[in-house]
Amino acid sequence: MPGDAVGGVRADVESLVAALRPAFLRWPGGNVAQDYHWMWGVGPRDRRPVWVNLSWKNEPEPGDIGTDEFVAFSRRVLAEPSLTVNVEGRGATPEEAAAWVEYCNGPATSRYGAMRAANGHPEPYRVKYWELGNEIWGDWVRGHSDAETYARNYLRYHHAMRAVDSTIQLIAVGDNDMDWNRTLLRIAGDSIDYLAIHHYYGWKQMAGDPGNLMARPLFYERFYKDVEKVIQEAAPGRPIRLHINEWGLDLPEARQYSMPGALYGARLMNVFERTSPLVAMSAESDLINGWPGGIIQASRDGVFLSPLYHVNLLYNQHRGRDRLKTTIEGPTFDTSREGTGVPVLDAVVSRSADGSELYIKVINTDPGSPVATRIDLRSVHVDPEATWHVITAGSLEARNSFATPDAIRPRREAIPAGDSFHVSLPPRSVSVIILRVKGS
Image (cartoon, rainbow, N blue to C red):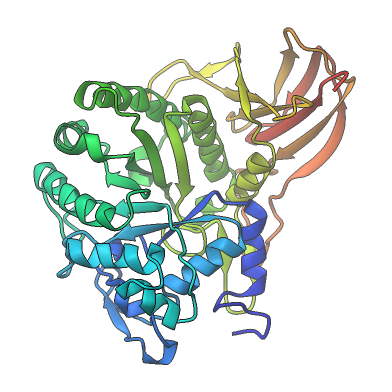
């Protein structure tokens, strides 16, 4: 490791993660969570076992990053750690999960709290988010089961873990299959705080039509409304929110790090913003390297950032607190699988916490044509100049890589603005326009 590494994490990589200001970080997975036993990753590093990762090509996994290192890393980048508990995989038990909660959150006088203290951390970590299993509906994970079996296992783990710390927030494994969600919520809904759902979309689903990729996020917007109805029916009165803690694309590398990937991600993040507070948390998969393509790519000697990293950074820097009503009129396109009359433009507007700024996040999905756009504001007056951040590329083939790390990156310029103004949105572009409210 380089001399400036902290806790086994390279300083250059950690600074890029910290810049994103992530609300939470999830660990150890993912599929690998259903293979992992937390005791493998505590105590002196040189005494931790190397274990076989059954989820990923039976690769040997060192225990260099364990609970203590992950929590410390999360806190250094000001993120909440979210721990994924192994549910019934590879011999896992509710008692093991409860012991992990005690290790993290128990007093130093408790059995596992004393173990944490002996490892150099006397104060409890107060880990808030605990996910009970990963993709249990999939036959590729250990502990795979049907929805009813998982729901009953969820309750066993819930009771054991909450007996140790009644304040923890629990995340259940949901699915894109509504029958799974309905069964789970009917049996265990009263004990669920968040429902985790994963989204992946790729070359096969696109079926040769790039328009399908640009339209797919709008399907999820409709899907979330259906999930909300099922929650209300199966667990009435329970404020269960959605945790989209894995979303990504299964595309060839050239597309993963080009504008199509960034446009898909930006539109999906617009959907998250429009459907909040139902969608409470989300995480792109992956953060660093990983599958299908982390937004930070780190080799032994270098780092490059995907266009979607830049979108995440720009969006998080201009989140706003209050979402404002937005109406869009403009061109549409048709797709082979994702419907017809799909809007070319996608936008959300929010207001800063102090009311001094408005943030317009707008996407032009057209692959070849700019869209001359008029923006009209109602019931607010803004300064005559705005700041425009835009991410675009000269072609669909342009991509970031170790050889061309800055092929796609944001640019910033001042543009004329006002209560009604015009801007030409470049083809295949993601924009954030910052308006300063008069008198603020």
